[in-house]
Length: 305
Ligand SMILES: [Zn+2]
Image 1 (cartoon, rainbow, N blue to C red):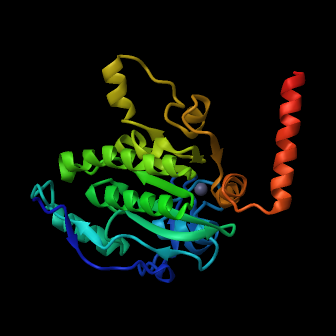
Image 2: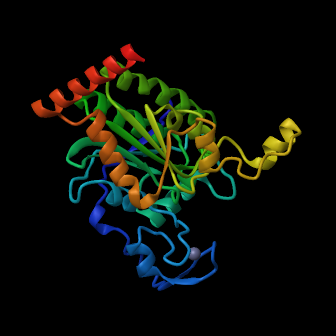
Image 3: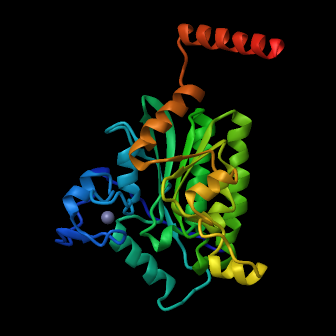
């Protein structure tokens, strides 16, 4: 049997975030070219205070932005990727993994945990683009499946935040298999009647967009998200057509029915709270009565109409 995973035990400590010891005080915004004070950018949810452009969030920053403070408990499985194919590009895969670990403190491009959002218990899986482009290999596939299994078992909504370039080429076919694996795991949520909210951020592309990220009951795009399967040039050359300039933007995805709503970063938590309370919160007797009378009104309305 091939060894897909090496077992190592680890826990992600959220308190250890963003103190990147790089000593950088200023960042240059790619959009407005202004030098902006890094601390102000961090305080502003990594949004440029000058022009509103979004900077990347690490998985830990994203978690901190969404969950009720102090509620996140890491349940990631204690696994790291094995180098089954002995793959070497400009670097051996094992070295690339080590580099990504040194940079992010993560063992792969995703963390999975249980938390509450607006006091509703959820399972939250969050990708980190800084770890080999947020790519999905055998570990990410397993972590997502593990998150889904936990959510289905506990009957807690499952939330997946994607930031990914797609499948991890260093694992070849093994990484493509994760599309099938996560897709079939998703059935567990449907069978258990558990809500699945997929949040697409910049970027959500290729193998992840073409599998689990597109299978949410509700799909939200963070404003500014890039959503698509493959790059513009490749598509244009394949179909021999010029693509519209807004192709693969959040708005384009929304207008073509790929996502249900486009949400600003600072409003994402509130949006999730609203959805969770509507679909998944335990209801008081008063809520139930209200919902029932609302449904009756709807029925009467449709009977009249
Ligand atoms: Zn800017």
